[in-house]
Amino acid sequence: MNFVTGKTSAVRSVKRGRKQARKSIGETMGAEAGQDDLPDLTLTEKAYQQLEELITTLVLPPGMVLGEQNLVQRLGIGRTPIREALQRLARDGLVVVMPRRGILVSEINVRTQLRLLETRRVLERLIARLAAERATQEERGVFAGLAQGMRETAAASDDLAFMRLDAQFNDLVAAASRNEFAVRSLANMAGLSRRFWYQHYKQAADLPLSANLHADVCEAIAKRDGKAAEAASDSLIDYIESFARKTLDT
Image (cartoon, rainbow, N blue to C red; front, side, top):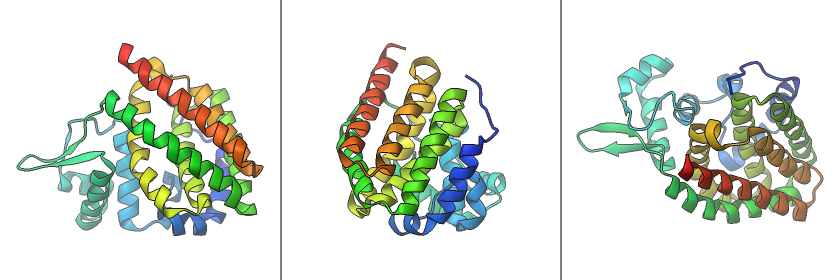
């Protein structure tokens, strides 16, 4: 499966809609976005978003030592925002601060991923239901656009577009749930989950199925159907858990 870097029309429309919903997203999660939205972010948020994508797409692989000065040169962002972004990535579990060795990209462990999924199942079901109940009309329109974008990435098997849409979905469903405690608990897991998927999807994943399952959650939320949102969330986690277990055999 190759990288497809061109954006579909649905992805572009989602980005426009997501800018309209930025205020509510920012209130709940803090601003995070795809590369096209970076000019609207703080320097720390830009550094975090770029580093998180480099780590989750394995450009910065597990075990790699990260030097602040090299990252400053690579990203064109100052040392203080880089340091703050690395602190946040450490809280997310994507990097590890090692005495006398520096900052390392964390290793990937399937059994850790399975434990993470136990927690994700409960939190994601709750957040999906709350989002269906509490999303504004504007946000429901963005969810409908995300569903369309997910189905287009499924048809095109567009892996990079899927990862970016997935990040946008995570931001929006968190904002729409209006529950900062559940959101805060789930936020730490997002990067670890995306990186695990990215490492193994070529061998074990069904990208079109995953994208369509995400679309099902988006459509249930857009329709304000809390029960359907819970069921769609459980189906998505069922698939993700099955995918994780397959990696034990690959």
